[in-house]
Amino acid sequence: AQSVTQLDSQVPVFEEAPVELRCNYSSSVSVYLFWYVQYPNQGLQLLLKYLSGSTLVKGINGFEAEFNKSQTSFHLRKPSVHISDTAEYFCAVRSLYSGAGSYQLTFGKGTKLSVIP
Amino acid sequence: GAVVSQHPSWVICKSGTSVKIECRSLDFQATTMFWYRQFPKQSLMLMATSNEGSKATYEQGVEKDKFLINHASLTLSTLTVTSAHPEDSSFYICSATASHDNSPLHFGNGTRLTVT
Image (tube, each protein chain N blue to C red):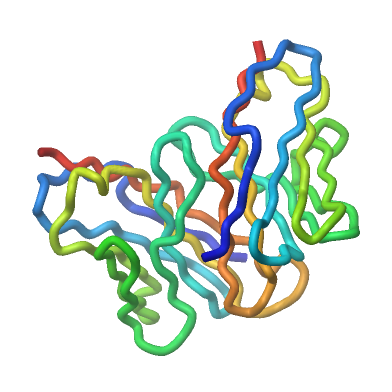
């Protein structure tokens, strides 16, 4: 079983400032890691994913995340945010192994990023 | 990129009626589809997993007779909320995967259901 903890439910940040959204996970098996963004009344859009290889992953809209296995973390960062980045961000994990239910994602509770002009 | 189309985007219905929500994968074959429910300001709650041609697997606490899921083809899954009540009002989101090892989930844009 896996679990995902997003430590901050809300993060306000001024426009053009950097931001970090924190995500920690717990799992008894190896996992894939994902960040999704959700704009109001919309579904989720994949920002980036870590499957293997380099621990620094770059995604869309200037976001990046770093996988830290020892700290079981996958924090999301952006060096300079825009008003349009205001949205809900979800961290998610998925078991590395195939089998029934293995494609199921376990989500964190989300972090609402509010960019202040 | 892969696109999942969910329809309708919003629906208002009267208590006691049934509502069908469609989820289509437009440019890939979705061997597995997931249905989620999202309450205001909360994360997504997995309701059920459906594989093409077989019965859906429901999560604990989800009434299978109330939330009927059909995954008749590799590009279409439907969720029918039967005899809807106001407490069923929520945001429902489907997602689909081609089920390859590295295939992420692709999400529909969700359906806002309001039961009056």
